[in-house]
Amino acid sequence: MHSWATLAVALLANGVAAQNMLRFACSQLVVDRIDPLVNPGVRYTPHLHQIVGGNSFNLTMDISKHDLAAQSSCTSCTFNEDLSNYWTAVMFFKAKNGTYKRVPQVGNGGPQGQLVNNGGLDVYYIPSGKVTAFKQGFRMLAGNAANTDNSKVSKGNICHRCWTSTNDNTFVGGAPCSGSDTVDIPQDTKCKMIRQTIIFPACWDGKNLDSPDHKSHVTYSGSGASGGGSCPSTHPVKLPQVMYELMWNVSSFMDKSIWPDSGPALMYSMNLGGAAAHGDYVFGWKGDSLQKAMDKNCNLNKDCPAAGLTAQTPAKYNACNIKQQAPETVDGWLKALPMGEMAIKA
Ligand SMILES: *[C@@H]1O[C@H](CO)[C@@H](O)[C@H](O)[C@H]1NC(C)=O
Ligand SMILES: *[C@@H]1O[C@H](CO)[C@@H](O)[C@H](O)[C@H]1NC(C)=O
Ligand SMILES: *[C@@H]1O[C@H](CO)[C@@H](O)[C@H](O)[C@H]1NC(C)=O
Image (tube, rainbow, N blue to C red):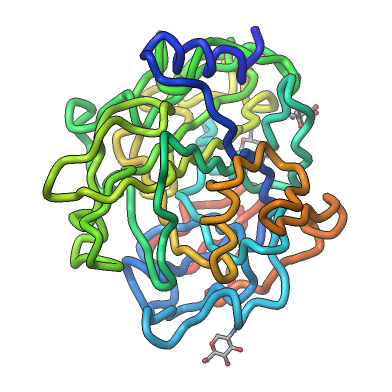
């Protein structure tokens, strides 16, 4: 089944006209233990992140001082005009012998055409009706990195899917965060890839670019990838709905004989499961290019002259990388998760 068709059917089933949306690839900018949103200025933050987007990503990114579009000279995401940063936790596999390995990330192509990623993730901006694009300095957080209670997570907004195909061009399942999708990370040797979806709130208070918990200036108005429902009076401004799509390629870890005797084989870098999945967003599109892209119905990852959007080749966005600000080994078999002390190779 065609993923866009499924989404369109889901949208039509809700009585909402299907709309174009941006859906594009972002390659890995860096995998690093810093977090300018939640732990500004801190090197070796409590857990490891993977970051995509503009190369001005840094330890601190103050709202008033850090202009992502002006300070970045390249982006690891498809559109030249998008210097935003997008980041999430990283998935690890734990082997029977107690060592850990970072799970590789791939793009999710599907029938809309392959999205070529070197690591990283895919980003969506889903409009529903007339939307107001984010303002310079805007940032937000979805999910809670310390949560261990599945019931506190809306499975309609942050979820996992066991992908039984090895091929990223074979679509598996229905609309994002529907059907048998789970809050937990599936722990099943049948999974070749695990798709993680993080859907952000689409309603804004219209005033604050951020809030102390990085969440209360925005709110959800529904679930799933429909672009959100109508906004409440506390958060009246309808935003484009941001969605991250991550494909964790677990296929090289699915031999049960190397799984731990007890406890999960797959976990996030907080040493927690899917209940702690989270996504961080710092807006950094040039000028009003995102507003124009929404108003002009720009679609998928294609050039959109009406809004001045230009897509880079995969070779170009793959080449945009930065060095770790908290240098440590994050790949290969590790003696422990990169938490606290610097990680050491096994
Ligand atoms: C990060 O910030 C420091 C201090 O302001 C600066 O020297 C450095 O060039 C910045 N790095 C990047 C990648 O922009
Ligand atoms: C631990 O287990 C993994 C998976 O079986 C293996 O590749 C790795 O070499 C082992 N490491 C050590 C130190 O035994
Ligand atoms: C996933 O990993 C396997 C094993 O390393 C590899 O053969 C396969 O090509 C990868 N899949 C994708 C879509 O990159």
